[in-house]
Length: 580
Ligand code: GLC
Ligand code: CA
Image (cartoon, rainbow, N blue to C red; front, side, top):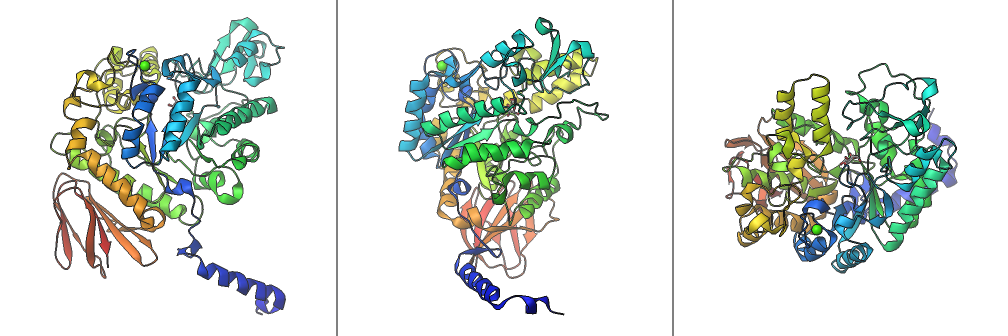
């Protein structure tokens, strides 16, 4: 029996009415585009320590960012995500905050901040702040109070385990030199929890006071006019505070055990209600949980939590022995498919926790560096999702590749080394991997011009400048019409002028091709093909049926050779071409 016959006629009419309305709206895969400014944003990530130093202390500062605002504008990006700039003893370069309402002395002061924000807004550039509230610094006043006595009012701001109950069950720490997330503190004869370094105690999100403090902090910055928040390590914020034994290889599977624990969604919904919904701000959390379901629960519009997912699967593909193009295709295609109808993604292949884009995903030899860097930027800026471009990648900056542990500054590298030594592991293998993958590779100073220290600083840079700065730098690349930089600018312009690159649906083409990553983006009647040759050899591809190649929108090398049924791409050639 047809159950539609049972639907009252009025409802039926109403339903027809809404169908009518839907038909008129622009459509993509049968749904509204649901336009939002943060979907159209192109985000430029700045690691402030390494961008531009103005007072000669070797450390980048806010005045340095102000000095370079016209440069940032010239890139065609529309928002900046700034790594943490709050007061911090710098155990983890600002990811250990000692005062959330003040600026780190190294970086300047609140006046500098206000001037920087104003300068950005004058140029229509939005500012996304990093919010680090899974943990604070152990030098934060809350922790100083908390550790002082067991009955201090701040005691429950952190996770404590009284020693008389014995040693707490093992928890893995990412940055601890023994990998142990519990630190014994003699003042109160208790252990505290730190998923990161000993100087980064985890905040107790079960405590409503902690949550309120955080919302107040976020409001403080939103009132100043910042345009968004990136929630650092937030997927780990909720914990089972009974700390039961975990019978598993915790180090290997920590995401499964730490991410998205009970309570997290409640905290995010509360944060949304208290802060995010009250301002025109975008929100993104680092990490997207354990699976697609978690990711959707974080960002689908009806959840009222966050705006976009920032999933690690793509950025984790490249290892020191390379990666398979088929995996890259598979991962990005799968995530796009999952988010085609609901939710929104971040698109990135680099950030401050990774080595350099071109060294990991491209080819940083002199012959192919420029072409492959352009190819990667073409990729990031032509996918569906909000692109995140890490400072220096617009130039094709490369890994510095330190040889000895003394050269490293990063706590992850240094404590990781100690851990290998402490555990009698393979130090040589560790160093080899570090040379390729260390976060310091991605943190060397920005290369501005050919003068000393690439004109990053007049003093001694906190981390050495890559020796290749005489060739790879802003000033030289600005003058060269074929530079990686000018290609980047052309790509941002293209994306901004063509909704198809933002909202268009994505379809993988020639899935099995061993060296070409090809896909189309389609919006209404408009269709473009993105063709990327990820190899050091020429590659040909059969043209799919029905393809009529139109105008080339962008091309990093010479015009492509094509006949009726085949195209040929040069090594690392990247082309976007319209299809008629
Ligand atoms: C995040 C940050 C990383 C930091 C860690 C601890 O993973 O991206 O840089 O070290 O959290 O705050
Ligand atoms: Ca400085």
